[in-house]
Image (cartoon, rainbow, N blue to C red; front, side):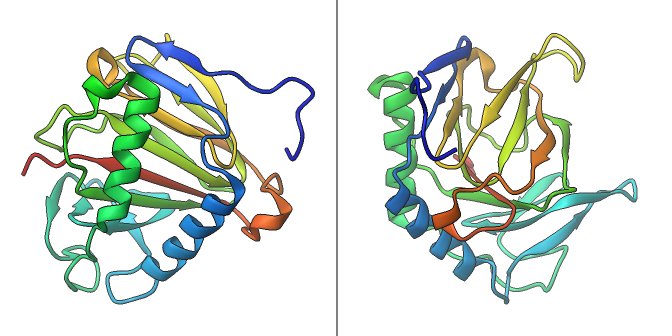
Length: 215
C-alpha cells in the first residue's frame, strides 16, 4: 500500500525474530529489483527447483555465492545448467549486516554473508513450511521482500504445525530471524496478486534471503 494512516511498527514475532516494515526505501527497492533481474538471466539464472521426492517448488529461484539445491550447497548449478554460481556482491553482504544490526543489534551482526537465495513468486506460488538448516552457521537469516504482499507464516522449531504466527510482508519489508528462532519452520501460504507498488514495476513477489554458509 502506498500510504498508511498509522505507520506499521517494528514487531518481535518471537525471541530473535523481528519484522521491520518499510525498511527499504522506494529507490533502494528499485535498485535491488534491477539487480535481481540481472541475476535471473542465464547462465546460472532463474530455475525451477525439483525435490528428491519428485515434487516441484512453485516459486522459482536463483542463487548467489553458493548454489542451494535440495538439500545442500555447491559452487555450480548442479540441478540446472551446470554453470558456475553467480558471485555474491560485497554490497549485498553489507546490506545484510545492516539489516541484522537494525533488527537485532550490532552484537548479532558479526558474520560475513555469502549466500543469497532469490525466490520469485507469481500469484499461484507458495512455499511450504521448512527450516533453513543446510548452512553450517547459526548467523541470522535476512529476508527482504519486493513486489506483491504475501502472508509469511513463522512457526516453531519443533514441527511444521502450530503454534505459528502469520505476518503480512509488503514490498520493502525486512524480516530477520536468528538466535533461538534461527531454525524455526516458516513458509509462504499465500501471495496477494496485484498489491505491488505501482512505481516498482514488478508483477509478482521477489524474496531475497541472505545467509552465512559457514562452509
